[in-house]
Length: 133
Length: 68
Image (cartoon, rainbow over all chains, first blue to last red; front, side):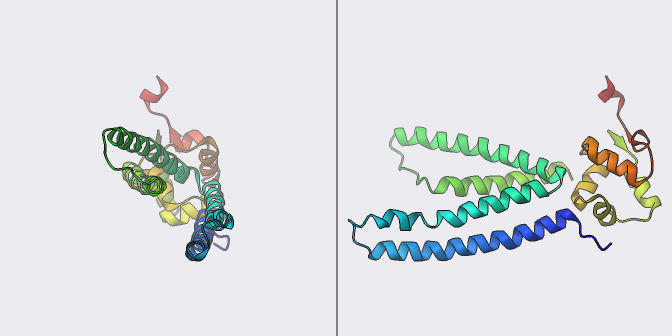
């Protein structure tokens, strides 16, 4: 069949573009952190420079949303279930940590929350795929 | 929902991948449809029926429970 499966095509483009975006994120993050470390504390450009890595992350978000629109309905359903699992579980975990912090438990860095969400999304996908096998 | 997808695919001597390519979905989707774990949208159900040149109700049959 000469016409490529649109799902296969969407997966291929997604992998390529996400790798590019995350590669750019890594490079910009390293440069931004190194640059900020050598700038004097009173230089307000520090805020702009340290926010630069957010730009490739926004591109990664667009790449992901495009992929989600282009995959088939079953893949979207699996991801919907995985997102639900990730959202609810992250909510419960962060709320639990919040309660513990009130009692003197060490503060959890906010930067860990998106990593937790991504991990739980992946776990949710594994669970969802098993359910429909 | 019961369906005759696996039988129809076998009659055409297509693999799950062949059918997936013809319908523009993933192989996992075909597997979930064949095992009855996933019911397709109306659009996909029509595409499947059209591919096999059959009426939609000749491919998909709701269970008695679903019709209650």
